[in-house]
Length: 155
Image: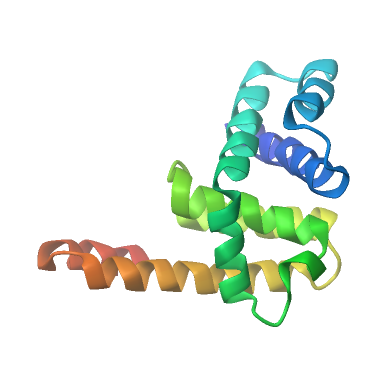
């Protein structure tokens, strides 16, 4: 399963990168990347889930990137790094299907494979800030009993 999900994230990254850099329609990119290539159906389904989720939540995701990478205007972040962050933030804050540590690790691995030498550190730093903020917000808004659960999540 891990291999399928990693491959799905890679394919989703390719699709999001193309959509971001060329402004091609999502459907056209999906047709080319998902249907013309011979990929396992599970890979296609999870990749589509990521692509559609990121596109649907893009304004909110980009808000978090802007908030936690303030020295880097979003349009000046390398497109590969920007889309790796979008995938990870979608998975961490909106999808909740992968454990936080898995989403961060997968993002860092994508950054190592496709980004620059500084990409893994940048991606990890931004995601660390996003997670710390999300946990802090949950802690503030949670009833007392849930605060104990949230504190355990941090560990």
